[in-house]
Image 1 (tube, rainbow, N blue to C red):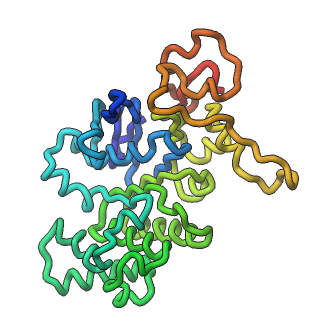
Image 2 (cartoon, rainbow, N blue to C red; image 1 turned 180 degrees about the horizontal axis):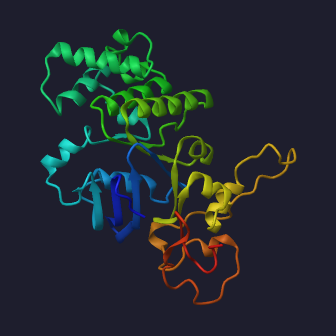
Image 3 (cartoon, rainbow, N blue to C red; image 1 turned 90 degrees about the horizontal axis):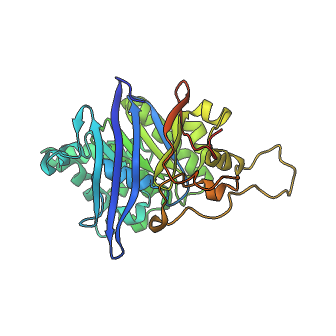
Length: 328
């Protein structure tokens, strides 16, 4: 699965949380790679481990409960799991940057937009005040915030949801990172603003030559913006392929279920939209074998789900968790 031009390589990542009920594994042996200048989409329902994977890459897991138990995370050849915190701080923001899921909680409500942008710069380099101001204004202009001179002195609550998301993008990109992780960057935004935000990320990616990891629930967004996609379920990657192959020839029952649930123009009016029955299993109830077979409704024999299915290359560049029940 790895390629020599990958900017990020994650191998067999295991992340867990210590709780009152014991240690719970949220990410179970995830592997992925991100080619330089390309966009990798991560899709799946809530609770599948997408955001925990992103926080593991940047080592921003809640402390002291979250911990990486195993695996490798290599960014530009540098192993991040063992990197000293001081060196890791230098990677965050300049090497890898992140757009968080909810800008109203990610932005500091008692600091102005300008102060927060300035902090993002000054954490990594010493700059004269005038240079910090000019870079902040330029970044706000690039993310198309009107009247940036005024917005610099405003607080997050004075901005609309779309404006706050643009400020988050400006903060993430102000140090020109080589890899951007966008965790649900269009959550709670209306459709028009969603399209603007995604177009903006794609345009800035082209200008800056960044690689992007885009985490989303929306397969429509994946189809429009990504080069490759991985499908996660219950802490594992169940399928990985190019966007075209995944949509044309989905090989896992979970992927087929997600694709079937997308509204289509050729559906008969007022027909019930197909839905995957049940819910993603709780982190407390994850089994060793295939985690989707029970929910799929497909017939299986006793004992078929006791061991973890191998992750195999079913076709060139198309990988799937080869469950005898779920994999086509």
